[in-house]
Length: 228
Ligand code: CA
Image (tube, rainbow, N blue to C red):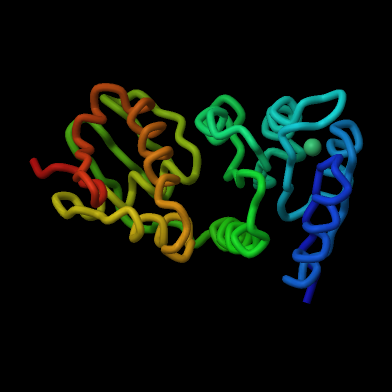
């Protein structure tokens, strides 16, 4: 079996130690970098399966590194989990602006982090949404080409937003509970924070513009795409 390598870009030794201990135990091979320059070099050279990137780094900030990784053709396919202490940055981190695949707020639970890593790696194996083209109102979604358009105009969605929209469209008219969406879109156990779902739905709505009216919030429960 080939090893699954994770690159950790972090400058605090105690966090590196905590990550090293827990990720080794979970069966991953690890590389570490203490700053952005070393991190970018290792990401290109080693092509890790996933990158854990700290937001607060000396010299080059984590978000800047994230942006570079997500635009470089050599590294843009590598999923990134950001470590952050700033809850208010989350929308920007996982949004189109920086394009991280997920985030964990410090102080984090190593167990939760491992769950998230495994979920992202599973997602990457192409356990995506299959099926035929769908259309609801002015929104069209083509699973095979991974395309979404509103009134014929393509909309750029992250893989999570795409999967979320697919789930809702496939089950038009039926309310989807947050924990169910979390489970199916992210592959998390339901004990993990369902606010993640709200964050991504908010981003998705923004990108869909007026067409997002089709997505209804069912208070205290979840989301639904309205019928007809
Ligand atoms: Ca740091």
